[in-house]
Structure formats: structure tokens, C-alpha cells
Length: 153
Length: 122
Image (cartoon, rainbow over all chains, first blue to last red; front, side, top):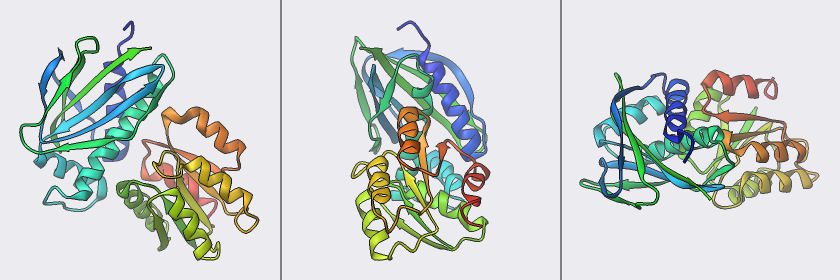
């Protein structure tokens, strides 16, 4: 892969959080690469890329941070992880992926997002398409993990 | 003023509803997919001043809904604002050619949305 697709995803995330949540996330620590079995947080939205770029994007956070984030998104106080919270996290991933795909160097479309919910969730990353991850945070909503894998076809 | 929101995301419908409420629009109906949106238009005798239409939906996507609405003489004058992801650039062009009145690109601020729809609600 000859371009920095994780940076595109990070830029899309910053833009989405700034416009739709009124908070600008900052990077925490260094980016990292993972394959094989990968631990994620309790609430994870996954969405696929298709077209000339095949891959996926995920946004993963704790249940507490998901409730804080979507409470702001919907301007209402959410105190349990219900359909509103899950749909909201799914929508954030959808918007971020759409904004990221528009930045990619080749034509990329989107699948439909889905949610993994529960403690000790894990995904599996293929060795020929490693996941790149970065941790981001906002003062208001805490930390979340942004991940992406992408390969040109 | 009556508005119909067609979007498979309950979150987006709530965000759009809130932005419209800020403009004083309270008479708002919702449909969770394109098929139900078209059915709602017919059931309500096409009495909407504006339709907000999501592009990417699993059952009857926004373009298909747009073309169906524009092909029906009962509804071909209703303003339709497409709500789209920036990844859908070609679809946006096709939507404009197919009769979309305007479009709003996600991510957007409430003010972005209000600017796009206000001229259809005056």
C-alpha cells in the first residue's frame, strides 16, 4: 500500500467528531499494526470498503464512552447501551468511513455497518491485509480505537 | 410545513428532526427505508413540503426512491434533499441528474443542514 490510509481515516474521524459532536479528538500514543486475533473494546462498529479498495474500518470504545459519545450526538442523556447507542456508534463509523473513502487514492465504496457488542470481543486480521490502529480521545468522551485495513485490488 | 425523513439510521433521523425543530418545523414523519418512504408518501397523499432522503439504505436505496418519486406525477414537484456520504460523489451527480433538489454531505453541522433545507421551507 503506497499511501497512508490510516491518516485518511484519522482526518475523517477528526472532521466527523468536530462537525457532528463538537469535539476534536487527539491522538494518544503511536499507531500500531496487528494481525491474527485482535482484542477490541465492548462496543465496536465495523464497516467494509469495496470497489478498487477492499478492507474494513472499525471504531471501538468502552460502553461508558459509547454512552457519553452518543448522548452528545443525540442531545439526550443515555444511561444504558441500547439501540440508540448502538445505532449511533454505527452511524459514526458509517460517516467516518464515507469521509475516509473519499480521501483514498482509488475509488472505494462502502458496505453497511455492523456492531460487535459485549465484553472480551475479538476480531481476526488476515496477514496479507494487516490492521493499522491508533488510539484517539476527546476530553468529553474519553478514548476510542480507530482501525483500518485496506488493500488495492 | 410537513417533512418526511427517509433514513435507515434512527440516529440520523433524530439529528435531522432536531435540526428541523430548530427551524420551527414540528410536523415531521419518518420512514426507516425507501420502500416505506414511498408508501408513506402515497398514504399521506403526497402532502409533504420536503423529503430528506438518505442515499445508502439496505432496502430500496435513495436513488431508486428518487426516481420513483420523480416518475410519479403526484410527487414529482416535492423538493427532495439527499443526505449522502462523501464517498457517494458519482451517486450525487446521478441524483442531481435524476431530479434531486439539493444534497447535504455527511459529516455536517446542524447549521449546514438548516442552510440546505431552509429555502424549501419558507
